Image 1 (cartoon, rainbow, N blue to C red):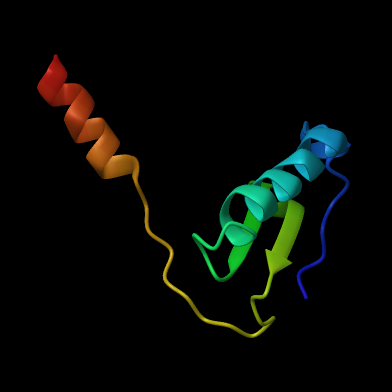
Image 2 (image 1 turned 90 degrees about the vertical axis):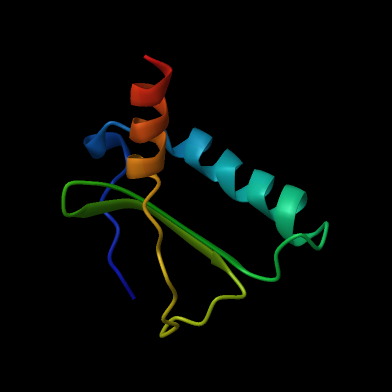
Length: 78
């Protein structure tokens, strides 16, 4: 398991990070929109918050980057 660093020392508020867990759980998992979910928030090489629901610790899954589509859309709008 990945070790987490104190969220406050990385500039995050722990109580707000916990609210994300509840939101994802109620909005997506409990409603049946997603079967599993995982959330990792970090800064640099350090992990501030790690939460999973139904995801195996050794699971391998694809992570998509949305930077290019958002940037290209912004350029086209200009």
